[in-house]
Length: 118
Length: 454
Image (cartoon, rainbow over all chains, first blue to last red; front, side):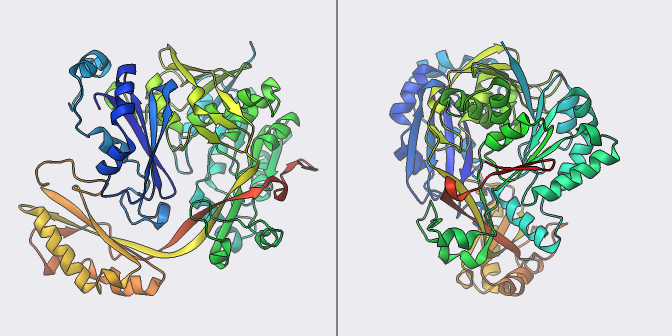
C-alpha cells in the first residue's frame, strides 16, 4: 500500500485487479517484480486458473486477470466475496522487499497523511 | 469551445436514492444519466413481465423520475436511462402517465431505444446460424437453451443519438453498453461521426469512468484517509468538450474526492486488456492522460480508439439451480478450533458435503474474503455454510434445518444470527456471454408515433 494503489472487481468467474504505482520508479519495479507468477502464488487459495498481466504505462498501472478465481462467479458462487471486490486490498497487504528509496522518495503523499495503518 | 455537462446519478439499481435529485439541484448540468440494469436484473424483469404484461422495467425509476422531472423539464436537462428493462414501451407508458399527473405532458417527449431483447427470437437466431457459443467456455447454447431466462444484446449509442436529434428529453433504452448513455450526448452535441474513433473512444472513457457512480469520486479508494468525508457523497459529473477532452468533477459541498488516483483506479476497474471493447469503438485505455486541474477536477485527454468490433456482445441469463446460506457465530477462546468442530458436526447432520453439487463453509472474520491477514486468532468468527444444487427440495429439507440446532448441540460460545431464521433455497441465475452478428440485431427507435429501424 505504500507503493501502489489498487482496485478489483469481476467479469464472470474472472477477477481483475488493477494496480497503480505511486511513482515511475515504483512502476519500473512493479513491471519486474509484480509478475503474474507472484500474483498466482499470492492468490493460490482462490485462483484456480492462470493469471495474465496487461500494462498501462500512461497510468503507471498494470491490470491482472485472475481466471477461475470467484467460485464460479456471480450468483453461481458460494464465496462471501463473489465479485472479488476485496482482492485489491489483500494484494496491497503483500509484504515485498524493495529498495528503501522507493518508499521514502515516492510515497510522500501517503506518508504525510495521518495514515492509520502502516 | 462548446461544452456539455453530463451527470451520473448511480452505479446500479439500488444505488443512493438521493443522488438523482442532488445531481439536478447541486449545480448546472445538461444531461442526467441513470443506470438500472445489472446482469441479474434482466432475468428478474423477464419474470415480472411473464406474470404481468405491463411490468418488466425497474419501478424505482419512476420514483426517481418523479423527484427530478419538473426541475429537468424547466431547466432543459435531458434524461437518458436504461430503465426500459425488457419492456421499454411499458416504461414509456408509465413515464407519460407520470408526466400527465405532474402537468408536464406537453413538455416531455419520451423516446424508446429497443431491439436489444433477443429472448423471444432466440430459436430463430440459432436456426439462422448464430451459435451464441459461450465466450468463456466454448459450450454450445443448446446445453442450456431450455433454461434461458433472458437474452439481450448490448447496443451502442446510435439509437440514443437519433432520439436526441428528434428532440426527446426522456430517453429510455433496454440493454445498452454502460458507457453509451454518456457517449451519446457527446456525439450529439458535438456532431461527432461514429467513425471518428478517437473522439468516440473519449466518450467511452468518460462513460466508463462515471458508470459506477461514486466509485470515481472517492468511493472504494485505496487512500481512504485522504477522503475527508463520505457523507452526501458527490456523484460524478463530466464536463465534455468538442475535441474529446473532458473534466471529471463533482458538485461543490458534497462528500468524496476527485483526484488523478480516484479516476485512475476507476479506469482499471473491471477491465481486461487495455483495448476496451464496446459496440461503438475499441477504446485504448493505455492512451489516456490524466491531470489534476484543480481541487476535485481531473482533466482527461488523449483517448485513442480503433474501429468498433464486428460483433455485438449478448448477455444470456439462465436458471442454474438453487443455493442457500446459513450462518452461526462462534466466539470466545479458541474460536477457530471450535468453529471447525461445529462445521464438522454440521456437515455430518446435513448429509455430508458430497450430497450437494457444491458445498463449502468460510469463517467470516478470518478467511471470508481472502486468506487471513491477521497474525493472531480472531476473538469471534461467523461461520457461513453454503450449498448449491439442482434440487431445491434437497436444500430445504437436508441443509436448511440443520443450521440452528448446532447452537444447542455443539461448542460453547456459539449463537445464531438474530434476524436469520431457517435458510431457504433461492434461485441461481447464471450468465452466458456470447457474440452475435450486428445484422441479427434490429435496433429500433420509437419517438411519439414515429418508429424507425436503425
